[in-house]
Length: 340
Ligand code: NAP
Ligand code: GFB
Image (cartoon, rainbow, N blue to C red; front, side):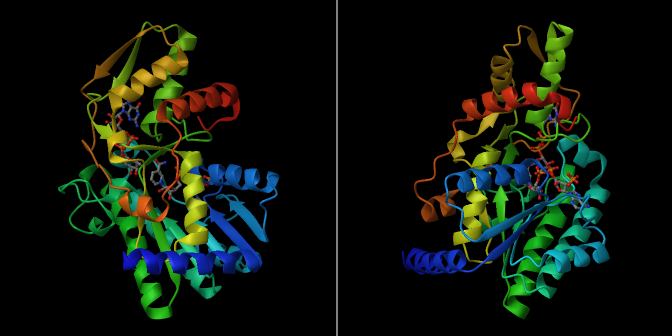
């Protein structure tokens, strides 16, 4: 209980502090699924006149290729952010990771080292970076929690991405210990929503199923193939819910220790359940079949959100079926300029 008191009193002090001073918040990876959701949430705040003296900058690789140290430093010197939400990464689903583990490791190692070093050199007050529940040890007890990040090797399918992400936590500790920096990280479960990546080679399961079922509807296919057995279990968070939690972490959470941002353990669903929900949302008349020659990946990676719930008690997640419906609707309305 005294942990909570210390954290909460610390939280309230920081909250008033940030809102009084002028802040420039840089969102790296601002053009992606999570970045665009944060943009939507911030724009909603501005409409409700909750806007305080915060300037938000959302950048993608066109503004600066963050794998390149010189471009990263020039970009930070130009914008002089006081706070950074660091999302930029090479990101992909199971099959993309399996095919490119070395690239996932090298690209993300370069991006992460450049962004945190440029933040330090520009006296950024706080950086919130992004890990993932898929980077935890493959052999583990459940539920997984924040203390278990380094307790053993990750699943073989995405070791490149996983080790690069774990090094963010190592860098955060190093900058905090050596220079007193407030660099922290969040650990989301699987994310989905508008502006997702719907490309068939690199996408995650939900955007892949949404896009492929829309193709099947247009072609009038009598069957639809889900890869793998459909048995693996996942927790899915709607991107707009994650965005609200990210903004809360930026303004209120001040510990170097990572914090899991996930739906509850009991909200875990099978891939089959997801496929059936997407079928319902598309109103697809055909039959779902499973191609078990394709990999299942990790069977489960059940994470506990107990720490989040103890610090942010009344947060309400969007019901999963509603979020799926809204994402299918968004895709069908925006297919012609979505990332295919
Ligand atoms: P995304 O939609 O693929 O967006 C990736 C973002 O990173 C884009 O804005 C992209 O810019 C930018 N980026 C990639 N390479 C870059 C480079 N070399 N230089 C500068 N920017 C670069 O990914 P996302 O799903 O929003 O992921 C955001 C964060 O959440 C990532 O750190 C990811 O690891 C984490 N995460 C995602 C999930 C999930 O299920 N999606 C789950 C857990 C954690 P361009 O648009 O210019 O390419
Ligand atoms: O989202 P996903 O690709 O990645 O989900 P992970 C993979 C699961 O969905 C496997 C099944 O069980 C697949 O067999 N699946 C069914 C499909 N049909 C499809 C399809 O058309 N496309 C895809 N992609 N999957 C990732 C990590 O694991 O989790 C990444 O590899 C990342 O590093 C991400 O962190 C959050 O959830 O298995």
